Length: 170
Image 1: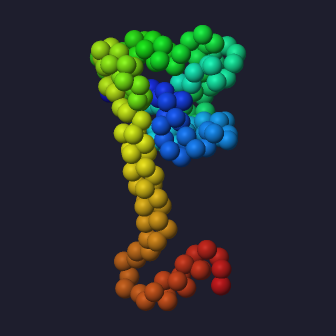
Image 2 (image 1 turned 45 degrees about the vertical axis):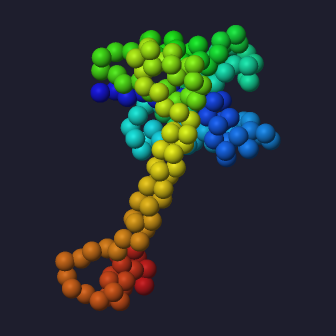
Image 3 (image 1 turned 90 degrees about the vertical axis):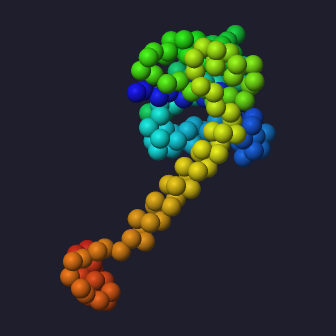
């Protein structure tokens, strides 16, 4: 089953404390940080992520970018992210596709839920991202600290010597 998460980008930036603070001085960096976090989320969960940003923050025609194997959409000039998300829900809706929409806009949540998509609040998504970041950090630390296992009963000193030889160091 295909799973897709549509993220209202500026809604997340306005809700997540670390992004809300950052946007006050550097909106572009706040967008980039959200994109990076969602790329990790996509890689870890396997859920296809699409981030939708309102055009009023970035003037010009609607654009679509493909960063981190993720679709990043900037709406057209007179189109809101909510309108684009509603259209995407209708376009993506199929029997074999689960669609989630991340927004804390209550009206938008009701509209997308009525369209057959699942809702996810900004806080829920942030909590999932934090949990995933902790999981990734734990896995990395476990791999770093994992000792090489051998079937031969040897001392740690001998194992270290063999490891140096294996790496070509004396």
